Length: 383
Ligand code: UD1
Ligand code: UDP
Image (tube, rainbow, N blue to C red):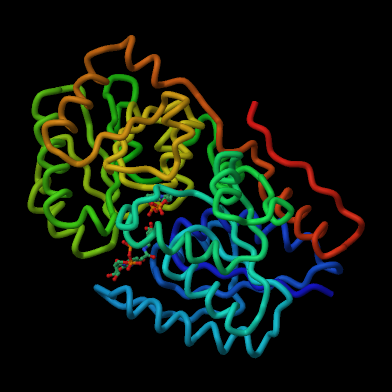
């Protein structure tokens, strides 16, 4: 029987791997599936594990306060070596572009275990943006044997780098599987801060920031821009679930602490967070996942970065790259608050990233490649 170990370590990987772990569990009898988490994130990972009721078989518990890239890489590589040596899987599945992703792919490669890369082929082609994710993703791609590309554009990137077409599968993004299973009509927030907001009469700006290249000055500018916006619009309310990174938290509280209509809250569980996107007017974020989720829910996103590896929603018109400069963030936000025609054009639901069946397709592809139950593969085509 094929033994698969699925590896992840941070919140976004967990959200995007959870639907696949659930789907793999249904293949008992054909596939033996185990889960190893590095816990590069601790609390933010545990939130997702609890929501999706995933109990890892291995938990390396590597997170340290203010950890460096060296810390994460060394701890993950050493810990996963032991897991893989003990389990001898036939395939290791990794996701995306984190340092856990890269270390897991490298550990598998050193032991000559095949690697399947979920969310493969996204590129900015800028080595330092996002940092270190662009290179993590490229290196993982170099180590991988099976490439699960979410979109046709990601496949083109891989083909352009010499990956053979027969090893690339366009599946859609599993984040849409997770999102569609989580956003519910009439959802009621349990958190009193969120349940007290008057969503009919207030325009909620949902904010997240965490990128390493934005730490320090760029984040300070973003927060100063937000401050200016909220002071000038009486009907605007900012909801900001603040990442656990102390380097983010310190600047957030210096620039936005104690302001009226600015709710600085702990990272939200995925269920309230996904439903909060649906209740928001606009999302401002340097997150990768939000660039995929918000368009699916018809919410404009201003991306607080200079580059994106997710051009599909930019092309669809629901996402704009605005960078981190204070003046630009203010003017782009004002435009969406003042110009309802412009807002309406951006607020169109677009779903270039998935249809809710990405996990099923990934399993189809694995079964197809490993000759399990004569499975064939049908690729994702956005409608
Ligand atoms: C990591 C990933 C990034 C991903 C992001 C998602 C790398 C190099 N970075 O960045 O690709 O987009 O996760 O959020 O792989 N912390 C806690 N509790 C938690 C999580 C983090 O206290 O549950 C704090 C710790 O002090 C930690 C710091 O946040 O040292 C930074 O975490 P780290 O994983 O190194 O970087 P992220 O910015 O979260
Ligand atoms: N998210 C969440 N709670 C929060 C903020 C974000 O569950 O308080 C989810 C969000 O919906 C998305 C993922 O976390 O699925 C994005 O994580 P993050 O921005 O940390 O990482 P990235 O996507 O940039 O790698």
